[in-house]
Length: 280
Image (cartoon, rainbow, N blue to C red; front, side):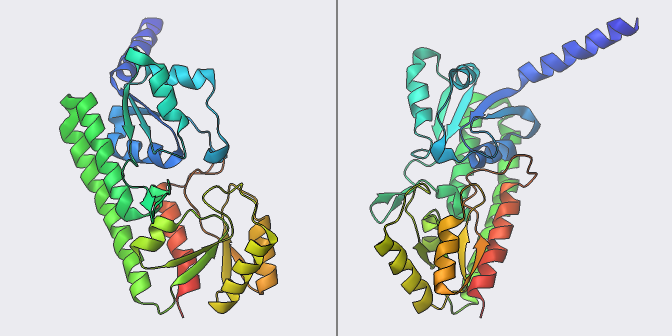
């Protein structure tokens, strides 16, 4: 009878898995938002693997199969533009698609996809995830609304911390290797000095480097920040020439393989890093 009991357990587990809403998320922050809203009611598959820089990613045929089997596909837009193409290629078999960053990316006439870096904009993205889940799985709408409200409350707590940090400091500028913090800077009255543009692979010219080095000195900065998933080479070069230190400021595009950090953890680390730069 033991084998029969084991078989029943397997069948129950498979039934529970099938009952959950199948969600495919393009990149790490989208997957985090989906897990926060969905809880145990969803099964989230993240397409861009841990340790992979999203700008470098190309979906495989297996990824397209995962999208085709999903009930919902959540992507940000621009940084994961291949997700929209995957949806279109599936025709009538495509899942419900959510471009969580739609309409939020404009920054002084430039489309900056790093919407999630600002807690204020992350709130909008999370509520959009909730709406998509309610549409795809209306029987669990109450749970999705409850989970969303709890997570939004934590994002609003981050918002207050960022606002409090900048309000308490007379310093407003920070330097980073990758221009991924434009929305954060705008929302909290900061000035971002970036070595490269929106893509971390972009190579600055010698004149660009000299300009940033001069600005770091002029603003009296203490750090040049780099991120964990790309080379610190340019940040180290600028910091050396400017006579300052390097530090980590995470655009939260992804996490290193094996990391247990959450989006909220990484935001707390960013707050601590900016506090070192901004506080007098």
